[in-house]
Image (tube, rainbow, N blue to C red; front, side, top):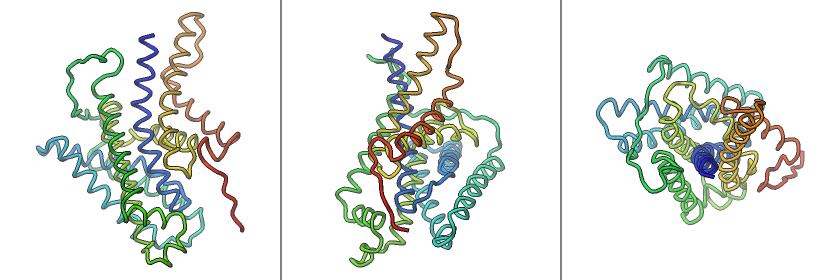
Length: 301
């Protein structure tokens, strides 16, 4: 039972990271109808910025806040400079730009900081506590930080004038323009927020997977699976989907290990957990493309 609870707790900690990245993907998809394939690499680059600030003597939380702010600014710049001219471009052109942005972030990070794996510090105490046998301090801290970020975003989009304007610009740009909302800038701010949320995910997961330019590749796939499970057009559903995928991948690997111990037959282990995300993506796209909490949208063409 203790191992079972450990797997659930670890899955929730992983799911918190997936939920952050999934939310960033959905924020951009809702406003542009495109998936940002460079979301993980942007988060990785922001994590390197925070690591560099810490090597220069900054504390973790100062480096954390600075990296989030710089990520927000970088996201706004990318939208205004690179994507704005492609507003009416074909879908394939925009996909190529996203892939190019992924390659640029990866190669620039490798050129500046090298491809050697680096240890990333944790801001959370390593002392044990009452539930230390179930979940570690860093994992618990990841869940708490993620929930705080998601809660702040909920309050921002639900109760602030700027957040409501951003929602209106994403859902109905034409009507938003008629009531005076500057839609172009709202979309740019959305990109900035998505980059900032992705940066939080990168800095929280770097201590677990270690820091290198390729660290977000698998996490982006898990986050994409979570967004699909919850509904690619539903931010709240994407968050829940991220937690579902995090728990599910851990439980599948745990069940595989238990079967192997009992029968000697190897089915799936920790090394093949990425396969779970691929299976989830294929299954959801085949059975329920709108996701568990999404809705089918019909458009006239």
